[in-house]
Length: 415
Ligand code: HAM
Image (cartoon, rainbow, N blue to C red; front, side, top):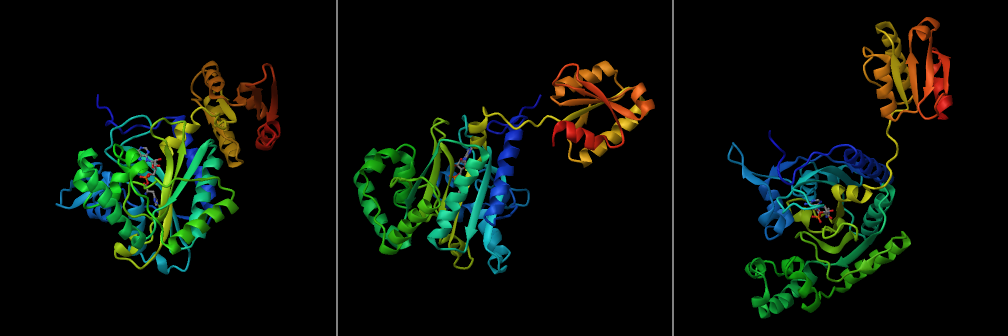
């Protein structure tokens, strides 16, 4: 017996249905906002993530599934989607298509974190990236699209927190001020923070151990006039879009590429894994990866966590509408044709095995959750008809001709 790996799981029905529902809601919302799908590889060169996600982040330092492949290449399973989208944007000159570079992706991400409820080593993200628009309208559109998507999927009770990390210039000044503060309290910091403050002092602010205390005591970043204006306009437009949000000046995010706006959507319903989605602006990443100067903004949503939030909500009934039963081989052929015709008319249908007894097929029909069993017995076969037996209302049964059966069933189903 070989089991799945820790932190990797099979998605079984009904949870797999929930994933499909969330993805369907996302595709609908992406259509409204002009986003197109990008399918990026799960495996990339390791250096892509080291250079973009950041060499001093927990994701790259501790959590990557990175290995040397048979050909001696240093590769890594993607821990997040943004670097792959940026690579594809540069590699395929997507800035030259004449269309907005608005892309979404849906897929598995891999992080060797300690597994717990809501935290897996393989998890699904739905992500959106908008490359090429520096304006606050792009930030506000991106965040409001995420909120719209969560609403569409049926998620309630989430809160949006936003902050601005400023531009490279704001951060250069802040880096020195923060570094001074961190050097002063070095002995109170955890070992990983102590070892990386000189390389990346900002990382200490989102450290799980030191972050909360530093958020209170460390000096705050002050924005340059242009970044302050960008942040102000983003908030104004969020208001216009009807998005409720809270400014959280301690929000820093655990990835290196962010500039200006960052945000997280949180819930109180998931315990410690409270981030349902997160993202922000990354104006310098495309250029730093060898592409054109292309400011960008985006986010990713944790589908596993959204599915947990929706678990107890009644799912739309996905039982077949009709269940087909046949009494003989010949009746089975008619039944098969009937099932084909029903599905062609958009009426979902299922069957068990026409070679089993009528009683056994009816048992399966009862369990299927269908509204009607359509039965072709010997009498019906002779009459070119089928019996329509309600599986919801006892004793309700009538005969209908096979020709024109789909329209008659539609009328009965009131669709
Ligand atoms: P992130 O905050 O690392 O951002 O991940 C986004 C979301 O993925 C989290 O809010 C959470 O819901 C989900 N997530 C992360 N790790 C796990 C895990 N181990 N198990 C289950 N769910 C998880 C990014 O990945 C950025 N690429 C977002 C972005 C896009 N920024 C700009 N564009």
